Length: 197
Image 1 (cartoon, rainbow, N blue to C red):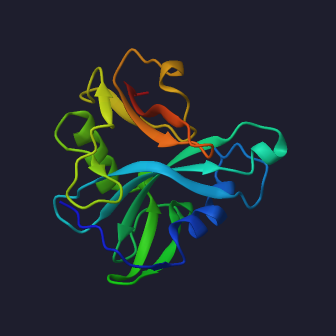
Image 2 (image 1 turned 90 degrees about the vertical axis):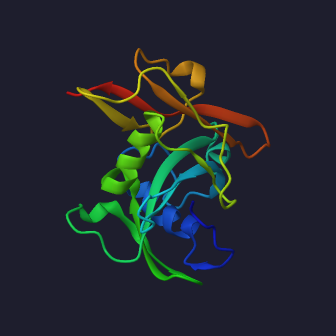
């Protein structure tokens, strides 16, 4: 099981995401510098122990200031001890100095083969979602519904999160929760299984 270090990261994950997120095609906000709040998420273990895997939910708190509802985004992240080859430049969220592990290369997890393999394993019931900030602690709030990925089926990560009852699929889907800035609980589909195009 992954061990959560109680240490610093410079820059922090939220600082890196504040710069990276508005450059993504799926960003729906208007702010060039959103005010991001960590709102939830979960972790998965890499059996090899070399890649840290976190699925972080962040909420853009600038949306209400612009007369819109807050928006929740899911950002799967891979933490690596060295640069990952063979991925597009935009896959790199940034680098950060970890107080224990040294320089970490942080990648958008949808471009990281280990992250996507572990997500598929979770959807097949072969991995256990872990608490985001507690070592060796399963997170029972992350629940798979329906068909697991298999032949002819792919996994799709939802970037902009919607309430669970707004995203039914005829195939499988993974549901997780987060907390809105006003303290209300949110829950939505973070990943779906769909036929391969």
